[in-house]
Image (cartoon, helix red, strand yellow):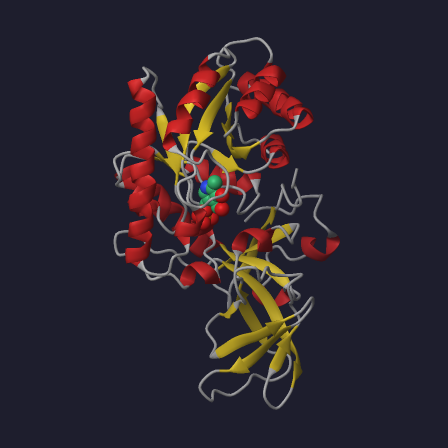
Length: 386
Ligand SMILES: Cc1ncc(COP(=O)(O)O)c(C=O)c1O
């Protein structure tokens, strides 16, 4: 068991070593036993399939959890934001990939400072680009020096978010990167977020066929011009098995697998991928009860609802509504409603923005009923949006 850090707010400090019942509601709780099984399963899967694992730390925003993933075999972590990278670096993570575009010169100055810091620590920073302007601004911020930062060209592989639209457009960007000595052409960023939550396995396979074909075409165009894309990186918790066995992806970036939210639980399971358990819960309490429904004390200031309402863990109850501080539940199939004061464990609809609502994760061992608070994990990059 860890000792309580001095920086802990007093309302949390006393919890370490206490039973789960001592956790006041609402609170964000991690089942550490389930989380560790998830962590190990993904690490084992990547190792067995000969691909690198670089989990997405935008999900948990924790340096401590990043380092645990790395101790289990991950080569480093991904983040989306410069400030997330800074927060994790300050917490001891030295190999970070900003799998996203950074354009603003002022922010790229911070990227350059971080590069110097990580390189001095024997670490590495990488970043994604999808424009000549982005490459020029990055090169300007990096100044002189050789191979200071790894740069991935992002290709849109179906999400219509960032990335160049056509595989052939990867080439001019790859060529531009090689003209700047401070930048190293590291490969291709190819992530399709919308494929992750396609419900049926067949739909995800079809989406990944498109991803893989586009990656292969980009590679062909770049290699025909005499350049190489050393590494193709991408994948999330919904499709990583398809990227891992594609023969073209060398690195996986899943994030949600560690906590597994209610939205991912709606996916049809792919027998080719390991299954993951829910490990993130909002402990809540029934604070009001009517004839047809009950209300718990956790609303969408406690858990994100952009990907749907939470599930109620282990109870025949369904969330029917949610407001700032309340979630309304009704009984399923005529099951009895629970009395006032009952404790309910909500599985958030979407783990990433849920974690970002909290400063600390309360880590429990021994289960949600009879377990003990074993540690408190800081959400280091909470609110790091720039
Ligand atoms: C670029 C990128 N890679 C990987 C992931 C991880 O996806 P997931 O949390 O669904 O595993 C995300 C999530 O949005 C992402 O944006």
